[in-house]
Amino acid sequence: MKTIRLRDYGILPDTDITISLWKLFKENTRDTEFVFEDGDYYFTPHEEMRYDYRISNSEVMPYRVLGIWMKEMENCKLTGNGARLYYSGHMQAVTMDHCKNVTMQGFVIDWKKPLVAEGTAVGLGEYYIDMYVDPEVFPHRFTGSNIEFDVGNDEWYPLLQRNCLQYDKEHLCACRVYGNHFVPRSVESLGDNVYRMHCWEKTNGRPGNVFILRHNMRIHAGIFAEKCENVTVDDVIVHSCGGLGCLAQFCHDMTFNRLHFVPNTKAGRSVSSGRDDGFHLTNNSGTVTVSECTFLGLMDDPINIHSCCCPVESVVDDYTLKCRYGHEEARGFHYWAEKGDEITLIRRGNLEQLGKMTAAEYELLDIDTFLLRFSEPIPDDVKEIAESGKLTVDNYSHTAAFVCRGNRFGSSNARGMLISTPQSVLVENNYFASSGSPIVIPGDAMYWFESGPCHDVTIRNNVFTDVCLSAYYGDCEGIISISPQVPEPDINIPFHTNICITDNVFDTTDTPVLYAYSVKGLTFKNNRIFKSFSGPKWHSADCKIKLRYCVDADVSGNCWIGTFGFSNDIVLEGENVNIATK
Image 1: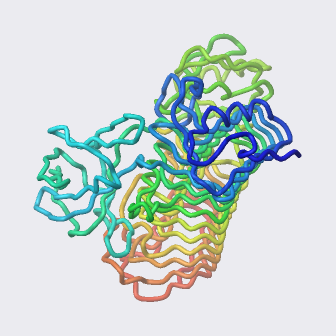
Image 2: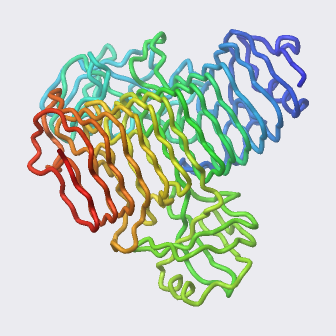
Image 3: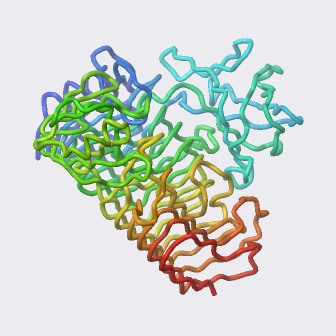
């Protein structure tokens, strides 16, 4: 492997290196280490750096604006030595496209004008909050009816009238229960960068609390990888991002070590880091590993791993189905299926898996629809289900095993992680302080279309603090919430199977510890559950554990420490369940 030191090629700190670095990559696509030095490097939008990427769970756009662009590179390494990469305006910080055996190590990713803002409460009324926004840290202007934020490159984005997360000023964690319920109805300026945010509902909180103010759209990921193989990201800090923090789609074998999504406190930001998810892992294969990472101040789930299932519109012929993308933020993929892929057939309603077929061809018709041809004839009973509008397809070949080990899930908006993959899953030795459920095992074919029933999940040796599930978000039925959306459940057709939860520590303020729906082979054993008095009981569920449509469950050997305020120990709707709560 040859070594290229950027300085030797005239690529220096304190300059815009967008085009020069791109040209250097194009001239050295194999067996090369690119060495940065400890300094500040700048990236700005350029016409040459626009490309049509179809990005999962993001706004559909005609192109993305790229910063670092690695395309078809193999056996290459980016060595940062602590280099700080600064971007201006809406950009995708790092893009890896059809790369193989690539490593990125030792960088800081940030914006001088961040893509998420903060305000500090200086006064409260029954239906308003007076909020100070620091113009030096979060450049902005008042338009007469709203605040617009400057993100660089002469791009201004208005404050969104949607949920603004509130952080306690002392502990810098999302406020209990009401933390996600502040929605600005209108804004007026009181002068000196103080703004009165009128609310739809009665306000909560106190002066000094910090509010995350979302603006702009979910256009770019921070780090984006598509159709890559064996990519490693080590020791990278992401201080700001205008969309998903790290998005990998249709990749094989990805490793992320010590990737930290945290605020740049030296720049005056208290808690804000990314606008949306930390990791979003869509339709990958092989194994995805996330280890020793940190999440704080994200405005969506730190980790979401899933595939993308698609409803069938019609039967074209004996070998072909016409399908459509179900969700508006996940459509138009170039690589949803390839020749030889195993495609799972799913009956909508009870989400029964009807079997698998082999893809022969995938033809994208438009942004919403595609043709899926098989190498064998479609069975008559499957055609009948498809013609009734109750068939969904999923790509089993594009599902990944997942290892999540030794991470710190600090207080962020929404849940800690969402897991939807049929391959093996290991979640161990993590620390959770998520404001919603720290672990959700969902699955649906009706709304998000993020399918992938789990068949082999181990959750062990984790710590779930009493900050967990202190506010309600979607699917937050328990600290661990196994909650697939199965509208027509059948106890004989379980959605998830073989989920083992052992040797964990829970600290709970009378919030339910476990909720499980449509599971066969559930184990919850040898866990220690402590009663916490750090907050009042608020969750509507009045039981320690609730099982619904579950078969072959073992809930035993757990140690409950303290006097809990639940009316019930176990609420059970299932068969062949061993229960011992003492």
